[in-house]
Image (cartoon, rainbow, N blue to C red; front, side, top):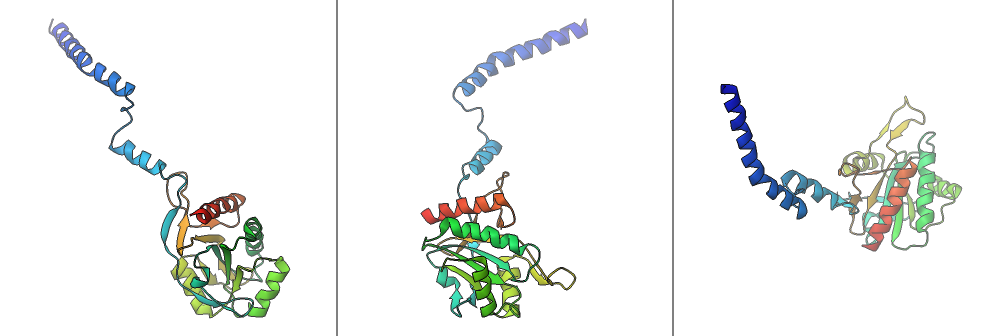
Length: 228
């Protein structure tokens, strides 16, 4: 008998809730309000940023010498969108692939005075001005805005590791005697490092210079920055 009264009471509460709440829920669905809320609003806010490149911060300043014995600084690229990498000419592993990726980027934007490339050697003791000039010729580089840069070794390593946070180091145990990342940095006309977001909405920071998708992504984003 007691159980029957409990069921009746619970049924009455459910009935009252339905009469009160269901019309409001239906109304919110019809008005498109059912998806609103603090957590979902944050997800929506991230999705609204899709297609917009993240501004990471100012790129480090630098002063180096190119394959033509000209002093090149970050100010040389002022007003230009440019891609920057760290490499070395005798690299037997990832550098040849990075070179080919950069050649694809050069080809796509060849002739555009507002685009440039900076390739900085991490083996300046070997990669002299003449060696870099020969290397550029060997690759078939045509753009006058692609600078192969050399300078003081410690200065370059600080620029890579502390400035751009792109790993570079001497290591006698690896092929070629040096190791470094295969990543490309993208810098806008105002000298800021820029990047896209990954599928989770996080900034990727740098682009994979060893991957076809990475090359396509950076080409697309260069085009976006050139239009800004």
